[in-house]
Image 1 (tube, rainbow, N blue to C red):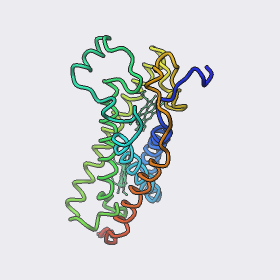
Image 2 (tube, protein in one colour):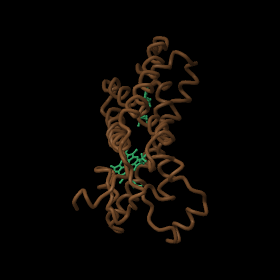
Image 3 (cartoon, rainbow, N blue to C red):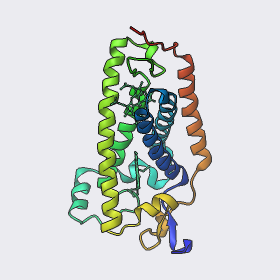
Length: 227
Ligand code: HEM
Ligand code: HEM
């Protein structure tokens, strides 16, 4: 399909954030299972996922039309109508998908935030370990583990839902998350977005990354007491 018959729905920052988060999460799991010497990369990738998920939440208020929570978060009635097939196709996220977007973002932020205080009781700790009691860090580490399982479940459901829409219902969702565009037949001209607001997105990411870097730099040296 030529670009002339498609309209822009997902801005570039949203798409980049999506694929970088997916890579970052895969990297966080891989670096955990690869062994303790990979922890510096676990930490770096975790920071990246945390900043990107936080950015996506801010973008839910400051982003382009279909990126905004107000554009796709709907009440139970709209969700039920959608499930009954009465809602029609959404240009952006559908009312049910919207719930998984919010759940994924909340779980991603919780995963990154708990990691900052976690420790492995051997030699590695998140940068804020020194700010709290070791017993509290152990409890937060428990949450980091539990939440990582929840994240896996949500990602599994997410992939199953995408496979269902793309494979069985032939919706061009995956292509849209790559190119940002959907067929003009599905997107009224008035609903297409004019651009990506890239400079604004870069400023928001830079501010969030700087805030995290500053907090990490200010945190006391996190040293784990070896037995
Ligand atoms: C946001 C993306 C992140 C993901 C998906 C993730 C995932 C994981 C997973 C799967 C584990 C193993 C849990 C288990 O033992 O079963 C783990 C452990 C750990 N993570 Fe993360 N993590 C993330 C971010 C972070 C960050 C930002 C830090 C700190 C800078 C961090 C610090 C730790 C520590 C210290 C452990 C060891 C705890 C243990 O021994 O179980 N993580 N993480
Ligand atoms: C750790 C892995 C992943 C996470 C955490 C994740 C998370 C998300 C989130 C938060 C959204 C909402 C996008 C937004 O509004 O910003 C989304 C949408 C989407 N994701 Fe993923 N994703 C992951 C992996 C994947 C993979 C591997 C694929 C493709 C095979 C994929 C395909 C899609 C598609 C097609 C959408 C758009 C759904 C729609 O049109 O409503 N995701 N994902």
